[in-house]
Length: 266
Image 1 (cartoon, rainbow, N blue to C red):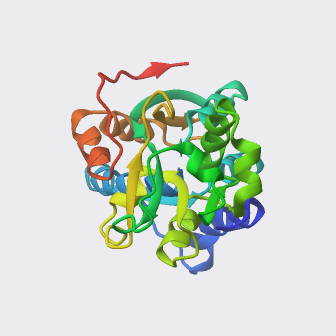
Image 2 (image 1 turned 45 degrees about the horizontal axis):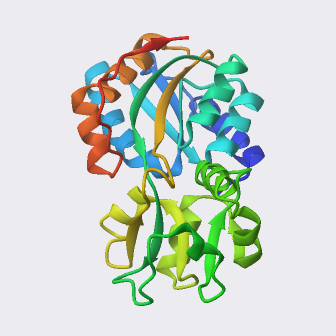
């Protein structure tokens, strides 16, 4: 995953491409920029395709760890929508005046991810992350939502320092956690349930869902950035993402939401 200063450069590069192609288009399409946590990129891409066709626009998606994306938004002061894997990042963006409107679009479930068919017979117990029998990897809380949520939950159970001491290393985000299992570098990782549901991952890993009392589900919140150049199209994207149609799309990728959603002005 790119550090936020490299992401910032990439964002600026995207915006300058039109001027590098010689003669500009007479009627260029409106372009929206979405900052999206890695794990949620797939449903966002599917919804983006629907909005592009409906609104005759172009939607660019910058993916990365939610914390790094938020830093990039601050540095660049641009973008239309922001979707983090942890609602704490969205709350922070609200408090700092970066986001003006939000809608819930799904739920992120934390799970213990193990090798396919669970050959070590690991149980769905957070304490296994501190067990020296297992090669364990978790994510950093500074760069990603999964790391931030994992730290909060493990601290609640007085396990965080024990898990840190037992972990082989800290990764930057959910993608690296997934690769550690796929490449058999780890026996056990604390990651989002949705990652294990992707077609290309199912043959490599299983997800052990944690009980709600041990690891509460995390709400996915899509936020409208105050820098949005086309807030009407961005708002339409939010409406579709939080509609029954949008919720079904998120559910297909493992982000299940079972509540009525209403747009909230903040």
